[in-house]
Amino acid sequence: MPYKIIDGKIEPLKFTTEEVMQKLNDDKIKFLDLQFTGLTGRFHHTTIAANMFHKEDFEYGLPKLDGSSIRGFTEIHESDLIIRPDPSTYAIIPWIEKDITARLICDILGGGSFRESFPRDPRGIAAKAEKYVREQGYNTSYWGPEVEFFVFDKLEVNTMTPYHSQSYNITSKEAPWSAEGVG
Image 1: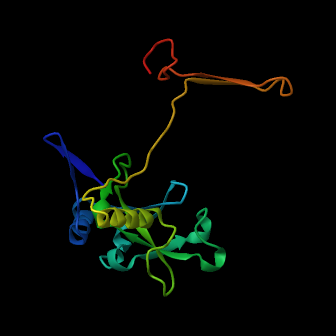
Image 2 (image 1 turned 90 degrees about the vertical axis):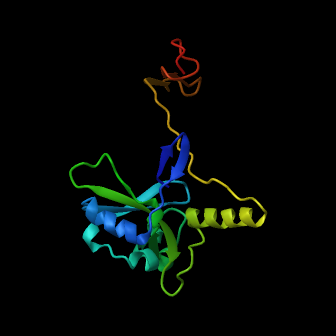
Image 3 (image 1 turned 30 degrees about the vertical axis):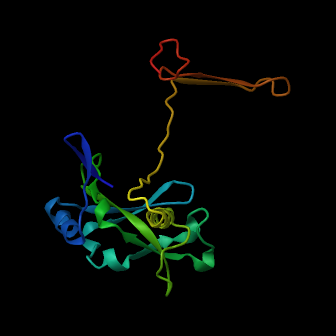
């Protein structure tokens, strides 16, 4: 969820449906990136022209997801899923400068007559877990992805003698074992 830091405290920015629809006009948004998470934690998205997005899409969702193309979601015969944008996640994507693009993170709903939360939607699973935590008497819980990456300056792999030995050597200024000691 987007946030600002005010007086050293994290303050979430929550937008309503009406505010997002107004911001799409005020911010001159050309494209809207509808994002969701797969079971493996990978972000997926579909992008639509902002002028094709309607207020009702926040309530009913958009039939824009083929669940069989997302690992672990559905088989081909049950693949029509719905993505429903969450207005509180509205944010402009700052690195897209030419055609101003905003993003909304979406919940995944079952398709057809089954419009409930899709059982394999990570956001839906987290919402159920958060509800359970509240029912157990806890007022606040925080949920989010753990984004990890590594920066290597050089990677050497020796597979010349596969039956005798193999090796690798990682050089990274940020690593704890770095001779420069900056990791």
